[in-house]
Length: 326
Image 1 (cartoon, rainbow, N blue to C red):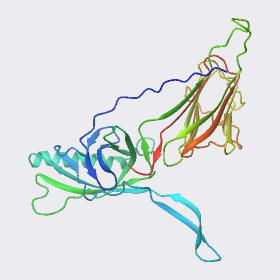
Image 2 (tube, helix red, strand yellow; image 1 turned 90 degrees about the horizontal axis):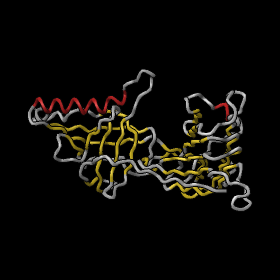
Image 3 (tube, rainbow, N blue to C red; image 1 turned 180 degrees about the vertical axis):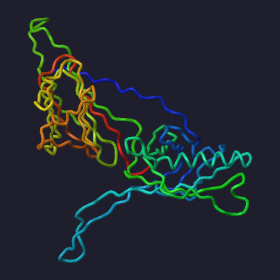
Image 4 (cartoon, rainbow, N blue to C red; image 1 turned 120 degrees about the horizontal axis):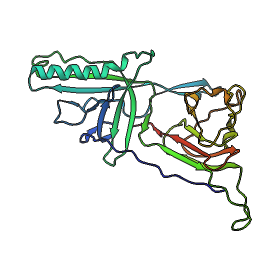
């Protein structure tokens, strides 16, 4: 069966401030991105605000809560491991050419951090993003919410043209996320004429048994995009037997088989199934047997199958690796 692998397009890299040495992670360029998308360079020592590297903490491995059971012969046995939210301590110095400029900078940066706590019209809150860029060009990010600490030092001469704050940023997900995604693409090629140039047969399925490598430190939850034509879609992680089936002809959907070019997106965390126009297709999964499985670190044997496939049928699996440290 012919398969086509598409190239991965790398997005342009935004500019970064110069690197500074930080405890736990070494030299890095760090930028804070507020909920509005404004980028605040944090390691440009020539700017009117920058991070005081001494005192930074929380950039290392994620914290964990361990649950254990007493062992009859002494000690205990580990029963469960639960990742915990992370707290990042972030000292920042702010200055200005005069008191007016300093006050404007102080207020603007305070608003950039505390705006992560403001509710939007739909009742949700938008986190900020801490981005760590390495000299080799790699970048990792973590979503942050302001917790406390935007207070001046309260000492003589502070608060006039300069001051510093020790901010605590709270991270509901303790893992760092790679800005570059990993993508696996499979596509049905054009069918062959049975007699030209010699007898040949094209499959009615896109049936791919492949190994997907997760280069990160912890499990990731991929997003799948299915492009028709297809009458039934099955995704299986063959080492665990976990699988889910998408039936576009399920009565609860009222659609019928996917036609050429029609797309459905399946997110595994949080679980979500959307047709290309935004319609909710979660009922098209084979509940209660469906398992929207994740990918462990390392190699994962995966099979994806599209029944009723034809020219243009395709499957795209996409995820961003997650890491313990920055």
